Amino acid sequence: MAFSERVSRLKSSLIREILAAAQRPEVMSFAGGLPAEVMLPNVEWDEMPLSLGQYGMSEGEPALREALAAQARSLGVACEASQVLVVSGSQQTLDLAAKLYIDKGTEILLEAPTYLAALQIFQLFGADCITVPQEADGPDLVALRSRLEQHKPAFIYLIPTFQNPSAVRYSEAKRDAVAALLDEFAVTLIEDEPYRELTFDGGSATPIVSRLNKASWIYTGTVSKTLLPGLRVGYLIASPDLFPHLLKLKQSADLHTNRIGQWQALQWIGSEKYQQHLGDLRDFYRARRDAFQAALQTHFSDLADWNVPQGGLFFWLTLKQPLDTRTLLKDALAADVAFMPGEPFFPEPDQHHGHLRLNFSHIDPARLGEGLKRLAAVVRQAQAVEAA
Image (cartoon, rainbow, N blue to C red; front, side):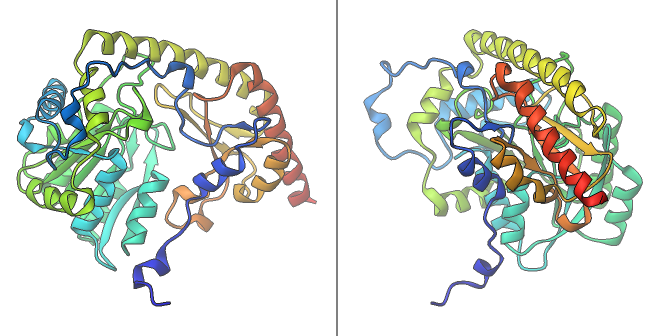
């Protein structure tokens, strides 16, 4: 059977495989980025117009595009509704951007580590992934300048607010410096902000795209982390030079995003009940973050180092005695606990051993201590075997 050359680069998603393996009810899973089901809002359908069952505009529902543009302007992003494209989750933004920019061998620039599913898409299309190390407040600026001087990447992909997986939030100074470098070298920015609203300390910083003067850009977000992931409603906002091309790619991909999900998103975005819901969500996740931090101190303080996330859904642990954390999965699942190894978040996974990404939003706090205790035992056993 003759498939396309691209299929030879297609890798299965480790996170999806782990989630499938962790479906047994007895498994305590720290693996996925799942919102807490108890915090999924109750939604109403009674007022939905019947006409939404018909085909719609590829760009998205006009009222939703206006609401998303207004929300972006409130963050400092200079845009109009004509620059907004409603997509099937912000994951589709990454697919469209890959189609727009990447041929086999195209150089792109990424944080190390970076979002696993973005890496999967970019590598599927044949990208040559160049990385910049992540520091506590954003990318290593010396390394970033060096990469930009040595290469001409088609774009840089960044997650500056509660980065997945590292939970890093870029400082104001780093955001300004990154924007200045991208303007200087005329490199397109793809800025992904799915976790912006999940801030636990009230801190906020305007998007990097709002600081650009010359470079082209795509800014993307979603309602998956704040409303219902099952709606599959996200959005991209693009500089005017890029928007028409992204729209054509969207048309060829799926004609338009689910109109029923768009209508539901429109009932919330910009409303008072949405602000109330976001406040409740932050309080809930902050409490879960604190409980997770306390349990980590109990079970992992001698095994790993980590920073307490100020938002988002993840802790990023670095083992004091590094090992390939992928080798822990089988024993962890046998102990009825699941986690996400750190290696797949790097383009060169075999060069970056010793990290674990742990989700704190989904697990029942009553099972938290037992789950981390089991995971710590798996790590200790593996380290003892390696040291022997």
